Picture (cartoon, rainbow, N blue to C red):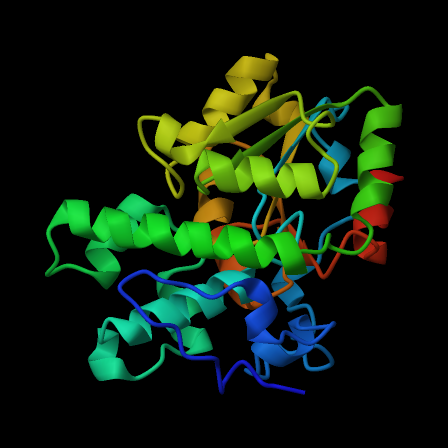
Length: 281
């Protein structure tokens, strides 16, 4: 089984192979990230700060709205983003050609808007060139996602719970709209979400609260009666900044970082008993 730490070489500028040439394993999520805090079977145990009292999601009244991030929350897409960034940055000589690490991806890339990444990753490039590079990266990600993307476990269960109760729902993401629409289509959630909010269509993207505030306004929801599912530090900060409780999805990002950012508690997937203890209180 090929490891993604020995990747297929991609010939740039901005040329990418068809996903079939990458030879991903069927269950790639256990092999792409090898950091002990991220690998399946070696997850952080919930920290004491993650403990919440039963019914905390209901403490301000009935739940009327649930807002979801997309990447890393609805689906385990971070490994594909990591692979695409790792390959393409290496080919343009980023970090003297040394491949980026998982830790670098988590700390500097995961959950951030592409406009921010232009300055973080390519500060010496002119802005149009940096934007073009990131557009090609997103196209590469979409090609990978079309072959590899899978929903987070239990997503269908929580969506059914929300829909049966007539709870309003929105998808709120920093991803470009084509990526968001592709993922929602692949997950068969296009009709589930009543609103899809894109970060670069707001005045400010996450970690600012603007995208979540726009979703609340569009659905005519109070933040007191709504909560958010988020997997990144920037997303958690955005949800908290909009006045909502945030449930961290600790699939990839360490739980302690999500708690420090303001998450009420952290789950591993949507089957997590801690989540259902809250929802069914």
